[in-house]
Image 1: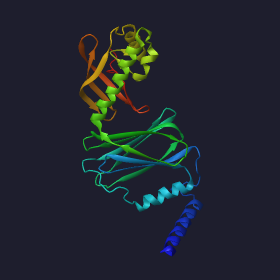
Image 2 (image 1 turned 90 degrees about the vertical axis):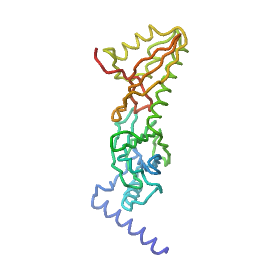
Image 3 (image 1 turned 45 degrees about the horizontal axis):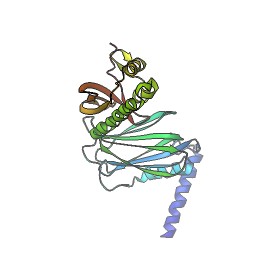
Image 4 (image 1 turned 180 degrees about the vertical axis):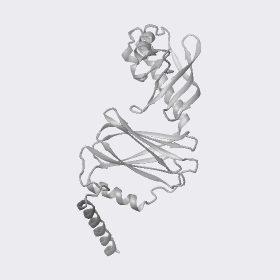
Length: 274
């Protein structure tokens, strides 16, 4: 048994040396200390994902190459038949976002490999879509990349519930900021809750914040999600009915967008110019 194991290792090393000498594009001969290799595996009923991060070396790339050739099942439970595709997103403020769409119908699991620039707060998002383009499950995780070996898990929950929970977090923090700051409230205090491309009935973000700060309620404000009215699954834009309570309760329609850098739902406006 040991003899065959040793022969397999020797065979692999010979193949790697051959690929390098031939200048193969399959396994680049140069390593990049400024990037990390990230493997993302999705399986277990399409509701979990695992991330393996390691230094971008020739050995690591060769290992991924042969692992992909052998295509072992890394999870036992099959991705459900109603999941048509998985969309991967890797984003951060100091790098160009990486996206990849993979059709998965009928596969037990999928593993995708990415070369990601090192740095802090790399945001990994995994979405599972059905055949109509609806996101069934979604999950995300943040990691600092420096080439150190790391294994992370992502729990992929029901997307619509995540929308409700995520927007309510934004609304609660938004209201708490207004209530805590009181008359000292400034535009900068509220800026983190608004997308940079916010536009609502002709008012951009700065104009709306000027108006909001100058008319901030003097009594305690509470805001909560009432109903999700519409979802754009491609752009992750949500139209929602909100309840606002100061002295009495009123309702309004608000638009939110998912910020891929922070993983938060931000006010987006109706994008109408007037």
